[in-house]
Image (cartoon, rainbow, N blue to C red; front, side, top):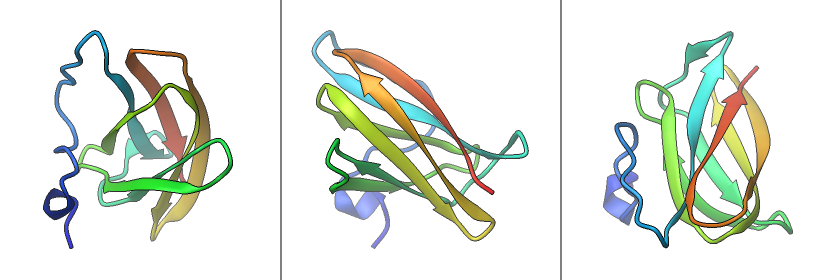
Length: 100
């Protein structure tokens, strides 16, 4: 099933956020170049899987989430990587994930 088929927002482009939404957004890269087609997973503070999207051709991804500490993991045929992000409240919380 595609990310679009499961109700995930379209990846890439501008992020419109209301005053009450918390967004974890970022980019998957390898050697500084964008990585499209990576499976990007959002894990909660206990490491439990919460959501998954596929990065856009420009490596972009986004999740609408609750405030808290999140791990974002990228899986791609060229490698894997992860990063942590502290989403302290409403707004866009950026993270870059390098895969190797």
